[in-house]
Figure (cartoon, one colour):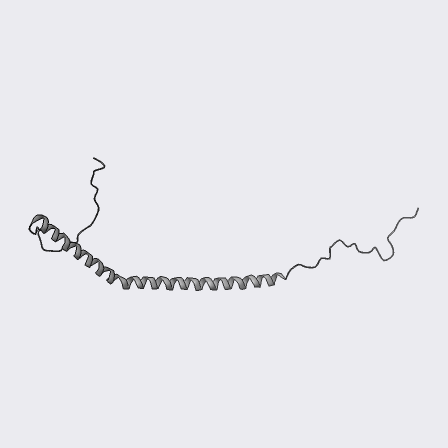
Length: 120
C-alpha cells in the first residue's frame, strides 16, 4: 500500500486566529483624554483652594475690624453693670462700701458658682 503524502505545495494554512475588529480607540487616545481631564480637575481644584483662602482672609480681616466695636460694646455693658451694682449697694447698705483697699479698678468676674457642695 502506498504511503499517504501531503499534496504537492503543502496544505493550506489553518486559521486559528479570529479576525475581530479592534474595539474602541487606540490606548494613546485614552491616555491623552485622561490626562486632559485630570489637568482640568487639578486646575479647578487649585482655583477652589485660592477662593477658599481669599474667603478666609476676608473673614479674618472682618473680625479684626470688628474687635474694637465689640470691645466698646463690652465696656459699655460692664460700666452699666458696675453702676447698677453701686446703686444696689447704696440702697441695701446705705453707704458706699469698698471691697478692695485701693481705688484701682478690678475687672469683675461673672462666673457661676454652685450653691451646694457635691463632695465633702
